[in-house]
Amino acid sequence: MSGRGEPRAAGGTLAFVESPVQLLNVLEWAYADAQRASREDVYGPDAARTSTGTGTGADLTVVVLSPHDPMTRGQLRRMVELARDEGITVRWEEARGGASAPLGTIKGLTPALRRARRVVIGDPFSRYVQLLLTLTTAHDLVVVDDGTATMEFVSQLAKGERLVRWHRVGRGGRGALGLLYAPVSAIARRRLTPTPRHRGEVFTSMPVEPPPGIEVTANDFAWTRARFGPPRLTRGTDLVGTSLVETGVVDLDHYLDAVATLARDHGATRYFAHRRESPDKLHRITTRTGLEIVRPDLPLELIARRGPIGRTILSFPSTVVHTLPLALAGTEVKVAVCDIDPEWLTDTASPRAQGFLSGVTGSARDITRLSSVPASAS
Image (tube, rainbow, N blue to C red):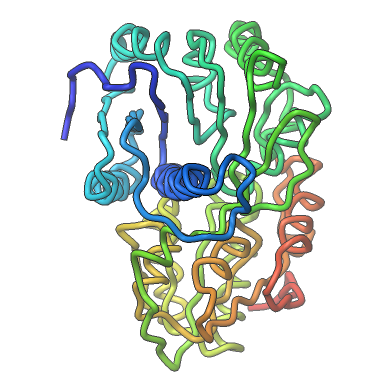
């Protein structure tokens, strides 16, 4: 899968992804962009975005900055197969494969970055991506969804704040590495801020209020719905896992209590694990609840769309409360969300965590909102 040759992005579009969801949303963006281009060819640049097109654009090269995590790498490889089936050139970079890997990766990508007319990124908070942004002279910069982090990115950009992931805010000092990297982050933030010379776009399924000059394009998962499904529905209920424990936001024991209570009260039979959830945590879940643990080989939006999937999907506040109703539009699946009780939060959780998670649920459409499970439940 490694493609060490020069990316064919001369004057074209160069996309950087580090996760399966980012690559999925690059495919969604490319599909929407091809539809828009097709309509403009026929109806002119002011054509309404309502017609149907096909294809993803021939000038797109996706660069995968491969992470270490085995589950993430596995899902990424499956997503790469789908991208190549769409006719997209993909370059797999072992960008973290050793001490010299970052320098070699950046050196190899610099010529393409200098020539690219448009750059698409999936994670504006990534230090790797921020460093690459300092090297590009592209006229257009596009940020595609990286989940709920997109909401925080747009908010921080509008306020002129430094780019910091929401669950890391308030965890103490920035650290020596953060201070050393601050100039690079500042340059990247300026590159992401639109000017008369640089156009900015955010392609998202999240509710955002962009700063002036940023164009927001709705991600309605048209590519996913065109390629997969509709799914076969089971009579059961599925529960979607979250990595809030792994990111230090939610206490493990409270999370296990909540999962057990939801499974019992709603008759859930399967638990779709987040790719970052630890094996020990998943073992404790299945031992305690009897839930079948499913480790998806693709992002959940594609798994659900392909089916089989339960008629009810239970989730905690996360990206899927926004994306699953879109991916499953036209089906009878109901998405229900359980709020996070403040008592579940760890002592080291960001002070903004509760408000952010409540906002994720409160701004979601076409969901059923459940009361949080009492912290003492067991």
